[in-house]
Amino acid sequence: MRTSLALLLLALSGAPFLQAQSAATIEFDNGQWFDGNGFKRGTVYSVNGILRYKKPTAIGQTVDLAGGYVVPPFGDADARYSGTATLQLLSEGIFYALAQDGPQAGSAANTPQNVDVAFAGEPEQASRPDMIRILIGPNGTTASEATNIVLQSYAKKLRTVARIDSAADYRAAVAADVDLILRLPNGALSKADAAQTARQRIQVVTAGGTAETKAANLRLLKSARVELVLAGDGALATARGEALQLHALGVFSNRELLKMWSEITPRAIFPTRRIGYLRDSYEASFVVLKQNPLKDFSAAVQQITHRFKKGRQLAL
Image (tube, helix red, strand yellow):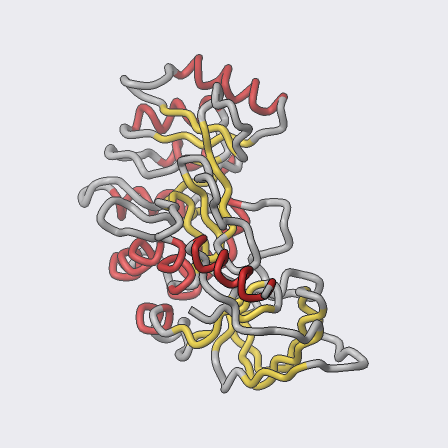
């Protein structure tokens, strides 16, 4: 009776069901694992939701990955999060999201069977957000006000994200020393802008910009080795749409895109967690692609065969 009630409550919450996983120790066989450079075939283990490369003394379950290509789960740094949107995020392999609104009552976010969400809110917000959001521009804060908000946020050990529009807004965000700029500006950046962004280790979301300036701005930021983060943008409902657009733009190699989406973006959202890499002692969370994304990025990221979160398989 209790089990039936729990399943009913889970269904009402809008959370996807997990495939039953009773084994604390799982052997993942016949997978090709991304190491940051390429894929290496091997057997990897999950012990209580943590990746291990040394074989445990006892195996509770074996999963055949059928030669699939294993990569860290993806992130979305500007997700339109809601209970109804999580299935789409999970189906696209997006396990980590930064949302611009607070959690809804009864939200199933940040549970084993759902998306992990960090929330960015206003400085005066009653409930403590994970990050402080600053709107810079004519209808938002001035450069000096943004700097004060950043200093106050650092004193509270909170990171800051800036939403900007113009190139001037972008420079104000850099001057304020925010942690993350949530979009590209509509105007053109200079080499000096890109270099200063890199020096301050500010991360920048690739979404936004205009058709005339986006590619040029991305090339400047890439050349300066700025960490670039993926997010959905307008009609591109999730970061997958942005990833596919970036692939078509031709600024990045397949390997660079894969690392931006599966390594840099998740760690930009949750910088203190052991995610973004398929390393020993990291969370046993990953997605398995049918094709090699280093050869055909667009086709591969749209053909996910398995999704595991902390050693548990998500059955959507």
